[in-house]
Image (cartoon, rainbow, N blue to C red; front, side, top):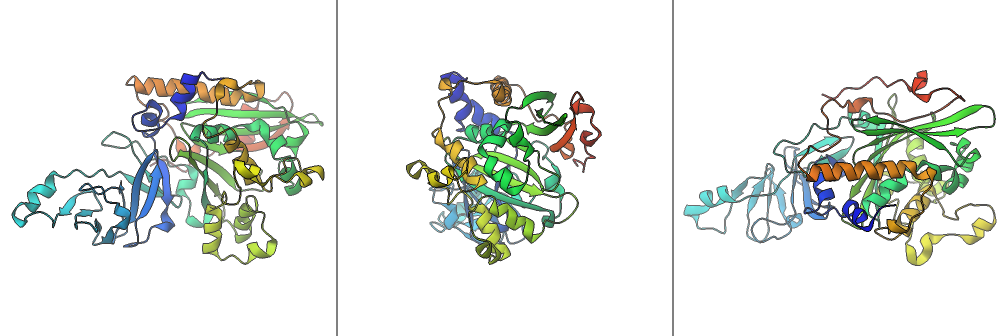
Length: 432
């Protein structure tokens, strides 16, 4: 378990906190690219306990500013978006997409240019990849190398990103995501119904093995099976909030990113992707079906835009503590293990059920929690080292982000999973 002080250290992410400063050194997804239209309405973005606006300028570039106008803090979500700039509707201050103030009509004409040149606008570097706008909120003038994960280098047709907002700290979301032992228990009904990863329900007490990596660590969850084989699920935990989830060969690859909105809310970004072929409409509908208890007819009636919007609202029907996340006790009596309607209901409910910031001093941890324990230890070391002035752990320039991939397989008992041909490091798509 964590001490109260350690729990507070890792859970609080404001700009003045040690963990907040560390997390800001990493690129993080902020908003879908598709939601930003050239000269369209700016989008409000709450991230890391602060409020921002994102917008697409006339020439297609993306700007990312503090929400408040530098003049009197009026929301720039209300601003005019034209001429590659935002113009505040209060006094007409105009800020171009690079963050330079170019017009201050509220000042006397003879001093406008000099005055504008002195105004500081907090704007942030952005990158577009994987259908998402990524932002760097850190202190360095030059942001770190952008993480060119496999999904960030694929054609749009090969990937699907969606976002769920969960009422729990980012740490609670991360710990739920990297907890491999809950797969065959919490998700047992879904696994059996879908025919996916049913092997996990045969052995619900995996053992774990690890390889330390410059970006974090590689986890192997090993389940001995009845026939002398081992069901091996190999996850990549990439500092500080990326989790590459092992999926069956019949499923798209999956990466989850747990991004703080503030101390008590976080966004779960799911990126599903296929390295070899486009995701079909049926596959995308199947992803939605994992989170929404909708009829086949209702799903089929969605057009592509509605499907994307529905995926972004997968947490909307989950409920909250007051309704116990719509748990169905009658269904439990009939054989449904959790009584929660979908895979998404199950994950979101357990993440939120501890309260926004879990009291980790009350935990009684076992060997099944070894990944969570390891992650906490690595994070505490990284946050404290960064606070002491050392470079942020996980940003080593030797990291080949394009070679990071999770995998699920069956192998013989006694065989070292590190030596299995199926798990030789993938050919990288590159980093440059």
